[in-house]
Image 1 (cartoon, chains in turn yellow, red, orange):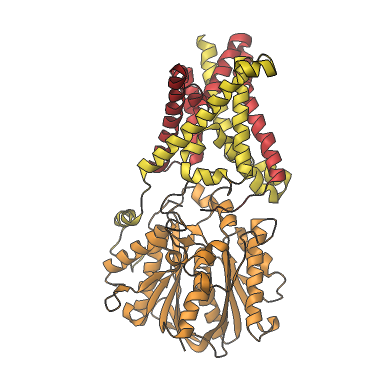
Image 2 (tube, rainbow over the protein chains, first blue to last red; image 1 turned 90 degrees about the vertical axis):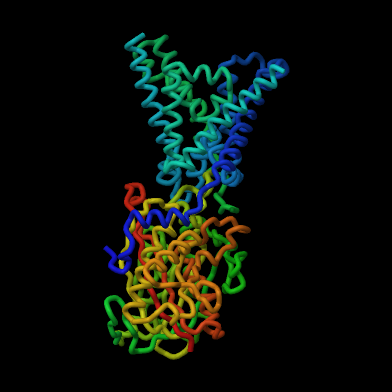
Length: 157
Length: 123
Length: 341
């Protein structure tokens, strides 16, 4: 290919490139992901416990366990969207890494951020067609897996 | 003490699931989108074979808030629907159970797009 | 006319001067170590409703800035050579559509300004053109949107990732005397050592830079010592290390024993403070070498701190689709030898 770089082949080059490519600090990244991910889950648990408490039942009436869980998820989605709209979710994500990607708040962020970004291309071809950029594959393959699981369950039940 | 143990479980399970994703991000060439898909599908599979129920027992929201929990709800929804309405449930159960989360996200995202503008990153 | 030297290099028989330059950058670049050298600072959104329009406005504002600095009118410009990273070079074409000057769009990724200087000096040497403007621009947010993900999406960038420079720069090449002289140009070859990681552009481009520098020196029978500085575009910290090692491997030592520092300097590694500004491997984008050359290095040539330099623009020839299709990232580099007057 390149006659000037005749002392180099792809394998040797990969070694040299690797030598100068700084690696992420796994310990630091994982600690951050653990702490932030853990905290987000604690927030959800806290919200749920408050929602299901005696006091809240007195105000809102009886809430079934199932409704409580759904409301908690909706609250976490709300938090994710809010922090994205306030332009801070990406700044937290820069520190927390997977700690803010994996929880449901990250799912909300992955829907909100393209919605905001592609507004400049209009609400149909921009927001409308790009909103599921990241969430689309999640819903597609999650649903497909559940249908396969359901089909097997239906057969062996 | 009980409440302390419960919250410890939530923190530990939620944190661990995120830390595993971080290892995949740092050590493999998987992008975050691929990891999210992997997590949802794993959630469905682990629920279907009955393992994830134990994780949820220990971790509670620490297990259901990470995206594996999305798969957990999808799978449980399908199984419940198959039990009650049969074959049709395979198709209606999954998304039915997670729809509150998805619909909240898309409606709020649309509102966010209306009222907020993206800003450049600080760092 | 230009005279061909060796295989890829052309020396200019008709003198080509870099008469004037202009550069407008964003706030992050202004806060960087070279901040004081740029002409103007503007927000990344430049009060526009989209990142793409903002980038186009950077281009048009830079063009007007350049025209304001010289006594020429836009009718006197024979041609603009411009390019950027957006699809089909839309920032350049939108930004320059009201200029009323003949236009040739270029795509050389981050090497665009060097590609412009190479093409411009050949066009002037053809005898037909006298004044050619070379421009290049990039914008952090529009590049994130096109090549990575929406700016508000949470996530981390690996330590080898580079930060797209927000900015635009323009150079006026002219056959009329004034300013540093372009003495020769080397057109680079596409070079690919099978790097597929889009977060490690430095490693993808370093072989192209090495190939072009060696080609240039071999064609003209020079040693690296001939130049006061060999300046690459945006290899960043990762790519700079790689370049110095592979040059050394082929018998071209870029270390200056007398000054006890490297003869090689990289605009991507210089434009930001990697620790304070957390920009990881450094800057990148068409605006990187364009703005650093047009401001910092151009002034060093004018002040006489540098006499002879070799400017090597480096580019990663990739598109969002080629990355998704797992194509390896090819590199390109073009070299321009410049002498102070």
